[in-house]
Length: 380
Image (cartoon, rainbow, N blue to C red; front, side):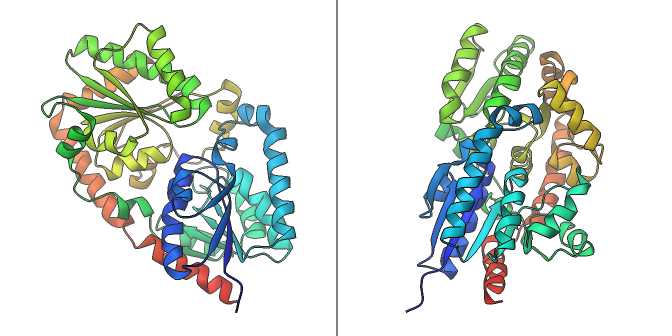
């Protein structure tokens, strides 16, 4: 009897855990007896994944923040590499997290282990110099946006467009009423979802601003309802910040349930990142905001290739939703932009139509397409 297929995966944050969980679900249809191990979270564990480290160990954003955790992160990568070289998997799949995964993939590929990267690094948005590193490190890239395949192949990198898995799992028509029932929210309320991020650094730089923006919105438009989904590990910090600020009228802090919050809301104030695409797939008007360590910001802004940071704007190639970045991300500005959406129903309808078209362009059977691509790689 042949040995069971084994895969090693690394997801470095909550969004990667979600994507990897969906990928593993599709892979299990092809390899029912497969074994999967590495770094991940609860969504992956639901598919039988054995996490040697939790993804929270890698969930750090910004150059300065990474430097603070550099020794621990490098130590984890070295331990994982040694373990995989000692017992090689059938293939290694890095799920996003390019700063961690590409170096690991380079060493594994050099030793003969097939390497797959799921989610093309954003070389079309910033850090175009990374393309050479991708070519050296990765046997195949699974792309979630349609234009990425041709871009990579032009640089000699094998790639497959598999669609965005969230476009298949998030329904075309969202049950707003059902989501409000699930969260205990009034059906006739105007609901604002606050999503300040899933990393510790994001909560430290953004959560206070988001809560202050909610306070200002509540003052200007009494009766608004706010929901703030929080990672369980960050819930206590967010609750403490709300108390420090004297509370926010109409605020409910949730443990998890970000998708339910997006389904229930009318508009969202949201941190830049994968969550903005999730909000677009839920057809929700949004205000994108971000603030980080000043030095990290100065480095990142110099590497930016496009005028947009938010994924919905990048994919639509225009500012369909506002972006408030760094010094512009003030509580007053955030409150103003959210209230502008609520004051303009026609604009909300128009952006929802744009997001419906975007959703349709990204919808594929991602797990099956990804599994088929991986199957072809193993067949070599």
